Amino acid sequence: MSTQISQQNLKELYDKDFYLWIQKNIELLKSKNFDAVDWINLIEELEDMGRSELRKMISFMTIILEHLYKWEHFRIHKNMGNDWVRSIIHARLQLNDLFDDNPSLKVQSKDELQKAWNKAINHLISWFKKPENIPLAKKIFGKIPSQNDFPKNCPYSYQQILDYEPWIEP
Image 1 (cartoon, rainbow, N blue to C red):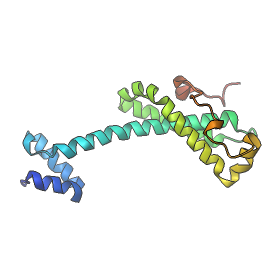
Image 2 (image 1 turned 90 degrees about the vertical axis):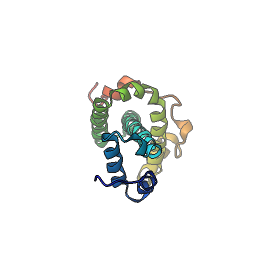
Image 3 (image 1 turned 180 degrees about the horizontal axis):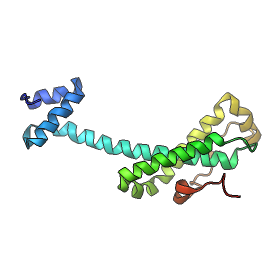
Image 4 (image 1 turned 90 degrees about the horizontal axis):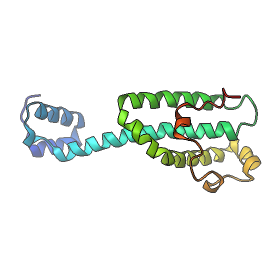
């Protein structure tokens, strides 16, 4: 991996062989050859990594919100919703793992609650559009629901995302 590569070749490598581009930049950083590093693409990749972790966090929160809301509002018989509970538990485990690896995300997650709720609403609407759920939509809403049929503000607190278990509580 010690072969010299020009900065222009390194930038071209970014599009042609991403893995080799990473290895070359690591080599340059370790050898403190900072002038040769492809900084523009490296910074972009670091920003993307941060956004990816944030998207994962919001995704896990969205799943929890969607399935909590389904459990509390759309269970039509007592055996319905076990998959939702499993999904909530799994998403919470994933969310906690993410927080363990990235403690700063836990702080930021409180600010992303509304974004996660808005996404959960979109998931709920899509769920009701599935042929097997249309009768339930008509029974509950009289139609396929829209955004106006759900609370505008998230009906759950941040703490409820982390530990609320309505299937256990009386």
